[in-house]
Length: 384
Image 1 (cartoon, rainbow, N blue to C red):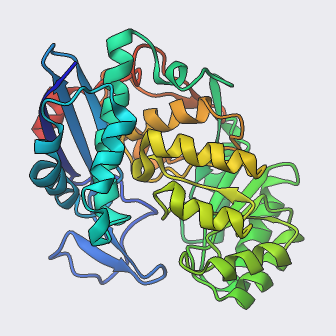
Image 2: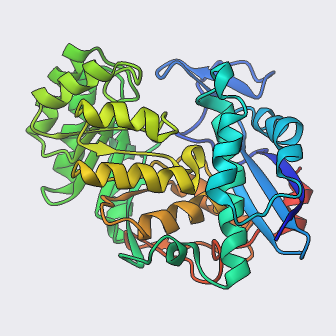
């Protein structure tokens, strides 16, 4: 089952739903990209991702995706210029060997993460899809079977600005059968605590609430915020301080009784190993759009040995990324809960022949060989 061709599709959906709500007022519209002042990060006015299609000499193909919220053409260029010549003619079933080959290809130059590993991720997911299709089995079965076929989900984000709007939208999700919401905050210790308090009051004591602080705080500020949130029975505090500060995050985790969650910015088992050994957090959040399936399974296995649960991160990844995450989530024993991005799902499903379903607080696990979903290629090419 040798690889015949590799195609990349950098996708930028114009006028699509804007992640985390509208861009700040007064920002120039000359560029696709802008800085969200509250988070200091570059965001796109479009919905961006990178899809890859790998086809074998026998005609079987697989779809992969890398999480690429900005600059998907960069990740695509790495695949086209560096990886394609290494992939053509290889047996597509040699997934672990190919991952190592691609990772080693730039290792001595220090490319241990970032766009380089994102590119490997897209290839990796496509190879798993190919393997599943070639043997007529879903990926979760190839990973050892499904611990669950309904994946528990939390709503990620209440992209409103006023108290009344936030409460109204949250209650709408509660009425739809969802029992967990993550608030994207990081506006300051007191404001975050105030928002969490009125959301707790509106949603009731049994509703699960999580807080994403987007790495905004110093260690002392994160501990101060965490102690306020503990009184509100918040499920976890995500990304409380800088992702590079392993010792600082560990200090926050030790100081609080509530769970601390980290991991969306990390891509390999090596990065997670350091954090596991230092007990830097209570919940880990690898993003399959950044780790791929191969590496995510190794990370989850490693975390299981430390009795640490996995709550996969899922942001602007489209249908392929979501489906890959669902298969991984089904196949690990230590799943905690999975992120659900309602503003992204409609666009993701518009590119799929059969939609992914998330209702009543649960995703349905796609059945069928490989990822169990397929791209509407005519629709995709119309958007490129």
